[in-house]
Each structure stands twice: as structure tokens, then as C-alpha cells.
Length: 161
Image (cartoon, rainbow, N blue to C red; front, side):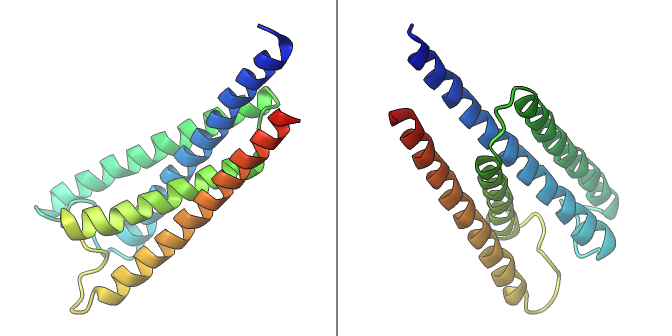
């Protein structure tokens, strides 16, 4: 295998790792913020509201653990990328925004509306809360996708030159 092909393989591997590191960090951090702000501080809901308060609190604890595993996993990957001098901030940022937006949109549509395991807030007119939650999620997700696509194009340009 010639040197140029080795370099291309090396680059593709780390492009993916930058993306996954950002994705895990964004997913975990957003889940953590959701859990702390909406579950603990505002007490709007629990992760699982279809049972007792005790079950809701246990579900919050498990959700909190998941968020930290994802966040810490993303940071370990980030540390490895920096050690290897393969960290690409823009691609990582795109992955982070993608993870954030995807988590929030999944939460807003799947968990809130389809599964109905909790609502964002238990009020008479939840529509405005759902609208704001999902629009913000879509904006973050779309921006993440735009950044990811632009870094993929930039990577191709670098490999072709």
C-alpha cells in the first residue's frame, strides 16, 4: 500500500472518530442538561411518568447515568484525537450539534408524543412547549448536518489535491 493510500485511510478513520466523539458528547450533554433542568430544578417531569414517583426518580437516575456515560465516552475519544493530533474542531462541533439536535428531536417526538412516557410539561396547552422544543431541536440538527456535510466536502478536496 503506497503512502498516499495509507494517509487517506488514516484520515477517514479519524474523520469518523471526530464525528462520533462530538455526537456522543452532544447527546450526553443535552441529556444531562435536560435531566438537571427539566427533571430536577423545574420538576416538570421524570424520564418515565407512567408509574409512581419512586419509579420516575429511578428512571431519572438511570437517564442521568446514561447521559454521563455518553458525555465521558465522547470526551475520552476527544482526548485520544488530540493526543494523535487528529482533532478537527469544526467536524467535532458538527457531530456535537447533530447529537444534540437528534436527542432533543427524538425526545420531543418519540418520547413525548408517540410513546407518551412523559410530556415536556404538564399544562393544559402543551403545544407551545412542544413547538419550541422541536423547532429548536430541528434547527440544531440541521446546522449539525450542514457542518458535517461541509467538512466531508473539505476532506474530499484535501484528498484530491
